Length: 96
Image 1: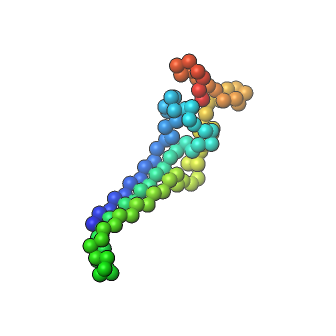
Image 2: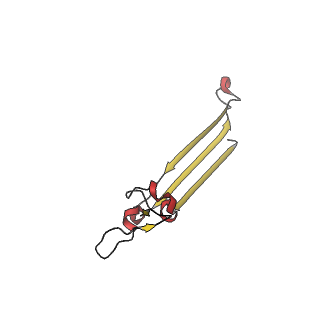
Image 3: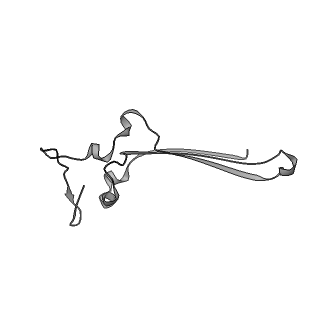
């Protein structure tokens, strides 16, 4: 193995805090986003006919979660006294 890289990211869904992105959101989209990446690179030594060949393998994982972190955008949307979704204006049109 010549190189190994790993990264893990956990973030709030950008549609929650970026109004211009709200048009692309779905009420059932996750509130939190999780991404995992593992990359391994190296040079083969065996079998002899493949000695010197290079390789790189990348594995991705997405939205791994459990328990209370499975909330959706719909779960945290502001509601009025009747339980209806509230909207706000952003440069004219109403958005969630």
